[in-house]
Image (cartoon, rainbow, N blue to C red; front, side, top):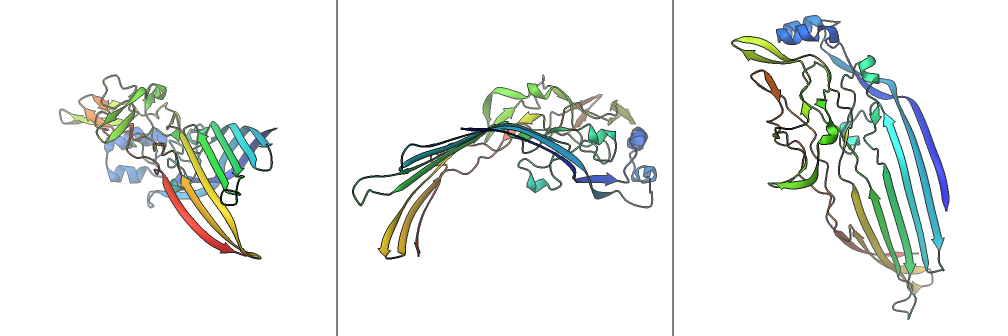
Length: 322
């Protein structure tokens, strides 16, 4: 058995910064005016549009306990297992949406300001518990049963983070709502049409989240602010998707043909037990104005899981090697 601690602290990581944005102090006046002219005139460089630059200002840290157990029972049976208990934190996990399992989740206000550096949270790739177990067994017996290599592999990990977002009411933001996101997960997910309702439905009268502003609605012909300007208190990557369990296996044998020429027959099975692993639920909310109330009730897709990871897949292969 081997036990290790692994720690890592990284600085100057790549980060996309929005430049030439509406100053935060000007947001109430600009959003109340609700015109492209007011927005453009409020920019630091009003003759230019907003743009994005890449700067090395990101940071992260990782702490992990790793336990490895190896055991060779004899020449025919060996087991290798590894367990990791870890935490990965950063202020922005990726500059590309496709490179994170559940998409990029960066600061609510990705401008080089104090609001950005306050958004340190679990990384998009943070899996608290990870367990891997691999076994290799070589069969004894007569020639037609002997020396078949059977290799099952178990891989399991707890769920990856899900970022809860809402409509961007502040220019240049990636806004999140207010409330307690830990109340979102249903004790027992339910079937909802062709999907699985994993988080509470946004149509629930007791839905635990409310919109962050500024939110406006036209009341008696007057554009009226119904939610004050401010960022949501829901943290980045606040919730978790379902975990995953996967068992793969292979069976293979090498046949001696002539001297150094050998023939190998192999069968591989992925997700051999055909266990259903769900994709992540939607964490996107849309703000709708109803009188003096801002609601998420029209966010029909929120909290729903609409897909699964691949079912069992099997393949057979053969090759000559020398």
